Length: 485
Ligand code: BES
Ligand code: MN
Ligand code: ZN
Picture 1 (cartoon, rainbow, N blue to C red):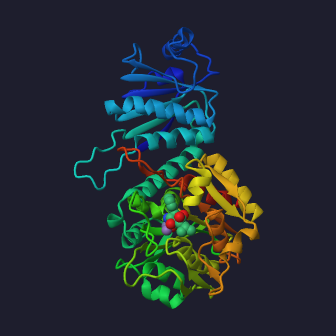
Picture 2 (cartoon, helix red, strand yellow):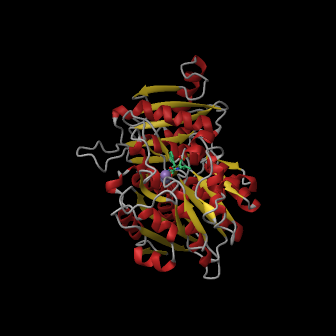
Picture 3 (cartoon, rainbow, N blue to C red):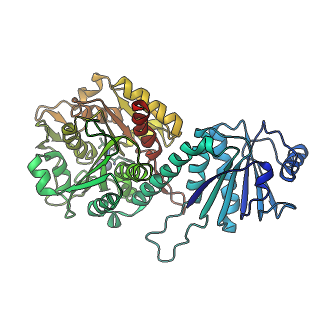
């Protein structure tokens, strides 16, 4: 999908040649003196364009205008929720006609956030997964011209959103691929492909390397599968050598059967999404490749399958993590925290400004927050504030969760320094408390995206990766650039 930003007012929008001209109209819009304005004025006055947000009016070959089709979109108060609903409704309406060229026109200047929401919603609504279909229906919307009253004023947020969309779509692509088309080795190759871009380097560690590092927790998860594990390390260097990096750690379980503590068969296929955290890290690097900002970012992806076999780790086994802490693996289905804890220890060597891990970590987080907000955990006030800001500006929302030490009580055991599970209550928090033990050397945060990284469902089209939280992560890492300037 190609995006282009241009200056359009209601007079010039009338000359836009395109399959569909989508006019976004806030309730406060005041029509002027040109054919398009006159038409809009009449549509509003007659009530044919209702004042309810996300109301549409569809006009075929409007007289005096150059577009094939004009769709008026009522935005009401033009808050981001209504922009999202309006664009979703408009794309659902025009999609069956398979339009190629769309002009998305703002009757009144949006701010950066409104522009971001409109563009990411349009991309989301027009996305189609094609990779493993023999006769895929390709995406039809190929060119999107975004019209705003003053192009120059929005050039920066526009570029950032275009990059975010590229990253989101890469993340969706990898998360949607079935586990046999998205193995740890495939992910490693995807990361290496990103390293063809300027300022990006990639290194992939194999079993021998992680063994030498002492990553006993990561290896324990991987040992049940014949598929070789990969520890992927991405570096984006946009700032000076002395500028410490932000480290993003993505859970890369390409399939989570639960291991010996095997999951029920129903919906087990959905555990191909257990690498959404890893996919979001790849997505951020894709966006960084496009934007080339003046920051340093490192991405770490511990990736493997979690399968049962005669070689698989067993409930009750005690292993030694890279940190030296021993772990009693009481439930092999709590594997995410095991691969992440060694990556968190590994991150110490970069003397990072901050480390943020992203993981489809717990079913408990799905119960707590559903698919609207990711769970965010951090004991660092600066990080909490920066993430809250990024959540708001990207509208890729998260919500603060607690880290009281009392939640760690259930992780105590007589047979190791720590157990990998506590009881069911507060399951997303006890998982975060486990991770926190391995992240004491730097400001740390944890995003549980089990509910937000993908959508469950059986109907065609309903199930799929969301590309979240690439938008949130991109806004977060770019905030380090803003503070340096
Ligand atoms: N990958 C799952 C978490 C998950 C569940 C993500 C549902 C998305 C949807 C994770 O590895 C897991 O199995 N967690 C267990 C932890 C439990 C054994 C303490 C869970 O949430 O049930
Ligand atoms: Mn699991
Ligand atoms: Zn998992």
